Length: 303
Image 1: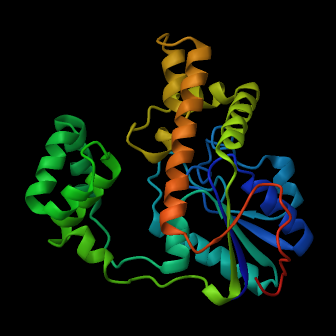
Image 2: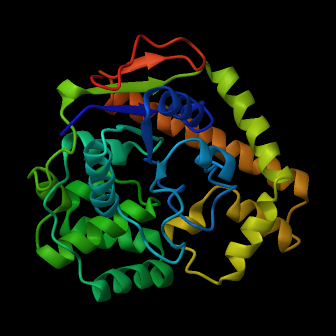
């Protein structure tokens, strides 16, 4: 393990700009920790760095996954491990940046030892969610794993499906598995700098509005249409990107464009609020900074 800088923060908080500035100044490699920016088909709607930005510093784990795939935290951890080790071998400073709290948790704390779930079982549980609805699936989880069912909202499809497939495949609750450390952390707390960008709420919401307007101008609706045209399973993570459902409703004649845009902005604000809650609860000991403030000195040798 070597030095690294970790930059987390809610969407539109200026993380990518800070990472790029540090990478250019310190000879760094930027490693993505955003669960939507991994998808190839989502450059605009995920606010992925554009080609000009990518040319100014090395970027890793951006747009390297097809939207038809179900990319997981465990898979990101393995990809991040390779990217970190490559940067250290080359004498470059890894700068891990994104807004997905679970990715940072896997990076700094490791992952539980849940074994792989058979693909046919995963498909069966997803099919049951489609056919029976989430209340029925949540009730099934309550019979097998009441502790997880109590903790999870009945409409939280991703987590209810995951908990149900784990208990059905292994006979143990997901909570029991999570108490056991499987894959170890990828970074040492003593050699990394951990930063959360924390804008004032009014400023953040203004940033979100301006950025989404820019997405529309750069072709965000066309990007959404291209993804929808692929006919992918709507339960896939990429299909849940903000803007897909809203622009899809407009393209289907169900919403005027201005209302679709406003709904997408509202969903983005809600998402940013959830991110902020995660960072406060799960990353309370990380240093906090407002966007644009001068950071205490960061070195390429030691964070």
